[in-house]
Image 1 (spheres, rainbow, N blue to C red):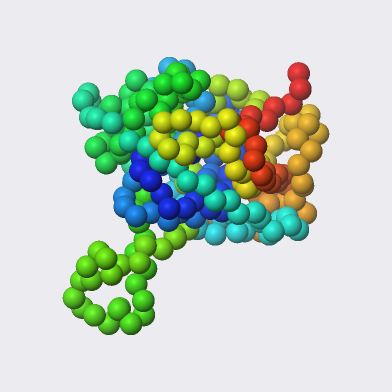
Image 2: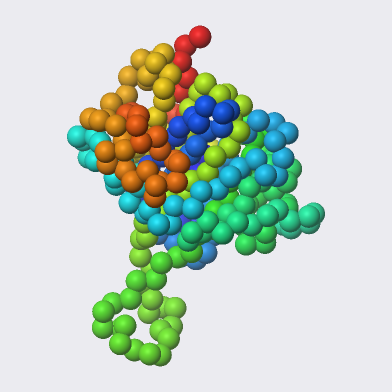
Length: 274
């Protein structure tokens, strides 16, 4: 699920990468282009092992590798897709606050359960009602704070005087990939947060999808079950493994699936048949 703490003008170019690290944890990287009118937070629910505590998620700073998904795409012969969705939502601070991490261009927090949403930093405003009817009772949540990108014309750059808000053009920004690892409750399955919340409260039965999902797995049964497009060669031939900071396995191939059209509005799990 991708949830925003306020109305966004547009979200596009959603790309998600998933890999199991073999130690009971899943690596997840998320990228998008977003147009914001004001500072807000984005939330990704995570199927963590229940009872994992406040430090279950380890954030990975990819600010020095904004082209990660561009380089991953070089391994596939078909251009990546684009999607456009809109989302919205809105919490209070009461108990001991959760830790806020600096992760490149973002600040981020991990919320161990819906009951802990009121421990978030005041900058993150997420209503507990958003999760009331979802199957996230014992899930955790990665929360990222995003800021609007103000695009000024070349002519206006020469003015030293600050421009009034009405003269500022809010433009799209391609944020660098958000990445982290978490202890997954299904260590043989890959999880992709794809459910949309458009108005901050309701979850429609279907939603417009144009997502690109990419994964790496050494589970041959899962590889056969997926039936996804296979990269031309090992991912390390296109991706700088050092800059990716352990997100990808440079010696393994990758698999890609694109999701288009009006589809059931759900998160996606991919697991080999028992």
